[in-house]
Every structure is written in C-alpha cells, then in structure tokens.
Image 1: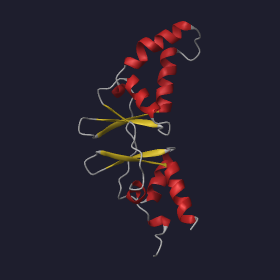
Image 2 (image 1 turned 180 degrees about the vertical axis):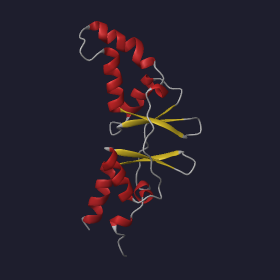
Image 3 (image 1 turned 45 degrees about the vertical axis):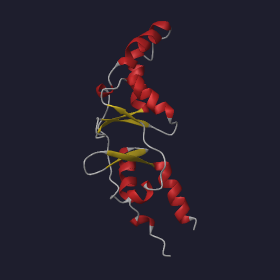
Image 4 (image 1 turned 90 degrees about the horizontal axis):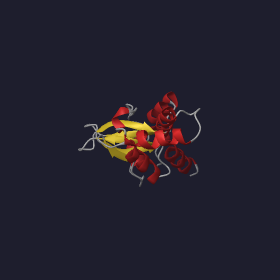
Length: 154
C-alpha cells in the first residue's frame, strides 16, 4: 500500500480519526454555560457558539474569558468586592456579547492550509464547518502533530 504524502492530506482525513467533539453552547447561553462547557473537556481552548441548527455563530477562547473576567473584576483590585462583582455580573452575561468570529476550515482543505492558518493567526485549533456553516468538528494542532508523527515514523 502506498502511503499518502502528508502535504496531500485533507483535514477530513485527519478529522475522521478524531473521537472528541468541540465544546459548544447555544447562542442564548450565558457565560457560566461557556465556562462549564470549556471545563468539561480539559483539551478545549475555546467554546463554539452555535444556533439551534448547529450553525457556527462565533467562538470564545479561554483567553477572551480570562480577559473579560479580569476586566469585570479589575485585575488590579484586590479583596472581596472584586470577587462579588465577578459572581454577580460576568457569569450571567450572554455569550454573544463576547464571542468572536473564528477562522474556519472545511474537511476538503489540505492540512497544510490549516497549519498555515494556525501559524498566521496564532491559533491552536480551527473549527471545521460544512458548506452550510454547520460545525462538524475541531482540528487542533496537537492532533495534527500526533498524526504527522505517526506518518513520519513509518
């Protein structure tokens, strides 16, 4: 059997071997839901915001959550007042208020295109969407490296 050149691999060829699903919340969720979703899977670096049909609306990274929490509580403030501000405010806000538009990829793209997007945009992962913008998975850099290592070790 002839091995496929890594440069010719598509995102879909790696995606089909993945078992995990990306962390998601509905667009009417609150930030507490996003924190819960992201912490249920310790490998997730972001949570994707989707509508009722699973269409990708945005993404919230751990970094964005931390910045938002820091802004709300005032990272320079100390004491219980800051903590109570956090509890009473930030976790009740809607995810749509802080989500960003993610860089996306499809299963048809080459893995090298995904790597290029990750490097150029300083990303660890990319949401995989279909032609209708439905979230079908997530390609993360660790999975690419594990897959590449298995190919190159043969």
